[in-house]
Amino acid sequence: MSTYRHYHDAARQQPERFWREQAEKLDWFRFPQTILAKDGNGIDRWFVDGELNLCHMALDHHIEAGRGGDTALIYDSPVTGQKARYSYLSLRNEVAKVAGMLAGLGVGKGDRVVIYMPMIPEAAMAMLACARLGAVHSVVFGGFAAHELAVRIEDAEPRVLLTASCGIEVNKVIPYKPLVDKAVMDSRWKPEQVVVLQRPQCEAVLAEERDLDWQALLARAEPHPCVPVPATDPLYILYTSGTTGKPKGVVRDTGGYAVALHFSMAAVFDLKPGEVMFTASDVGWVVGHSYIVYGPLIRGCTSILYEGKPVKTPDPGAFWRLCDEYGVSVLFSAPTAFRAIKKEDPAGEGVRRYPMARLRHIYMAGERLDPPTLEWVMTHTGRPVTDNWWQTETGWPIAANPIGLEPHAIKPGSATLPVPGFNVEVLDEAGQPVPANTQGFIALREPLPPGCLTTIWRNHDRYRAGYLSTFPGYYVSGDGGYLDEDGYLFVMGRVDDVINVAGHRLSTGEMEEVLAGHPAVAECAVVGVQDELKGQQPLGLVVLKDGVNTPPGQIVEELIALVRERIGPLACFKTALVVGRLPKTRSGKILRRIIRQMADGEPWALPSTIEDPASLEDIARVLQERG
Ligand code: COA
Ligand code: AMP
Image 1 (cartoon, helix red, strand yellow):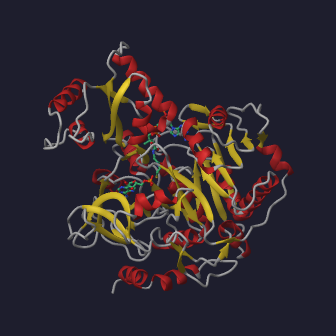
Image 2 (spheres, helix red, strand yellow; image 1 turned 180 degrees about the vertical axis):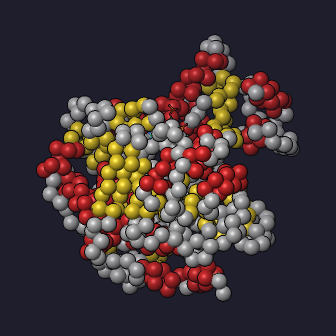
Image 3 (cartoon, rainbow, N blue to C red; image 1 turned 45 degrees about the vertical axis):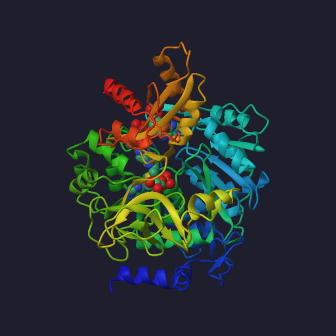
């Protein structure tokens, strides 16, 4: 039997035994006796009576094993011209002080801390410091607007908010403090303290009573030891887009996550302690949580924290430069990043400038990996590219090429095989498995492996209703696709109103709520249309209220500004069209799929349930005028 098959079958047939063996590889404070049990909500929970501290596993453990001098973190920031290296020892010492700083502000086990920071080492230190204390962090991506931050503050109810004075984008400095002030003002929940790390590019004014200066506090802080926590305690809440305007707080446990990440670092990413992983993402996303911060450190690898873009900082050779300079073994980013590189350097000249002697594999996730991008990267780098499909909810890859167990042939368009632990099935509308090569709903048969979400923060009903109720015994992923005759998984896209813009998951429902809030808008629909660079871009169609005299062009500008202000620049909402009416079924459901097909120039069929076929002509005309 193949190694992969052996692992896959073992995890499926004897999950407790399989995951106990994986857990034995880690340094627990109390090793779990009960490997899998249901909690009060009927959810499968892993390692329930185990006790650990993730910061200990990520830092202190390696120091105790004599590897304190190894490099844990490399900070490379072309936008500021800074570079820094932290050994396991120096990173642990910094993190222990940040933990001491937080403890001094009253933060303890179970307290929430919101982290709204750019890609600087202190962001990772803040996360690890929370883990050290048993506090629950919730990192909010810097590209979100004040309103989105406010929604998250209100839901997570943090005792403390950690931020920096600014983020730095290509040729532009973005002051964070005004956004934080507005978010705190708009939120019904107020953090007791806002701690600001001052950056020289733009110092913040600390005028509010709750404002504190990071450096001043840190100078007085005592290093804090690791606090043992039960394996089932939450490590973090990470908000992600659902189909409504309210983001979902995905709750990650501590013990299961540690075991799953450690397993994936070897089985999927094929990385050994001491090797270098460069994950070009952001700590605000799940990829950043799992493979910039926790995964590489738990495995004893070196992780690169990159404050820059794939292009323009300063050129499309940036990723290759880092791979070469730091001896990177694994590079991991989103397809959109490579499309941006390809667009600016189609001949791959930047790649040829750097030998990248240690680079073995390139991994991509976050959105569908289109075959032309796969081919371009493989041709120009000469390295195999591994697509991997997963979600904020699962925390680690559901499907991937299991390189560390046994490399498999690449099939363009496929995320390759289910990772051991994930029981992937494709179901029809009645919840029955479909034959090979037939599209359906991609579902995971329970139990989910360690590391996956355990609930939605303070809204367990939403977890049950959104993921577990559709097909009893299964978790539904929200993605559609098929398994081929070799068991390869092809993920074709979302089956709900979630879209993916430059690897960022966004809710069209949320954008519709913003548009509908404009006084001139009677009704609206937002769909994701194909985009060469970003995969998808949102397109809004709006129907104006009768009697509105404002010119449509002005309303469109206001709508674009509104989405940017409410959700943030990352939504990339740049196109809204005014139409006479929206296509609907007789029961009033807006036919978003047809709008999307029309906008993408795909063939579409007139549904028998349409109320007013002429509404489509109107849309076709507006789309044509727009080109
Ligand atoms: N803080 C503040 N603003 C941010 C931000 C942050 N952390 N990240 C992005 N933005 C802003 C950008 O400045 C831009 O603003 P603009 O409209 O004023 O120009 C807007 O949000 C859109 O940003 P982005 O989607 O990044 O577009 P881009 O054209 O600047 O760059 C890519 C395009 C492809 C280079 C970029 O999207 C990229 O690097 N993608 C990788 C995706 C990724 O890492 N995904 C994580 C999942 S693995
Ligand atoms: P996020 O929770 O932000 O990581 O987004 C998860 C969603 O992104 C998934 O449900 C998919 O729709 C999409 N996605 C992520 N990785 C892939 C991939 N490798 N192939 C296709 N879609 C992907």
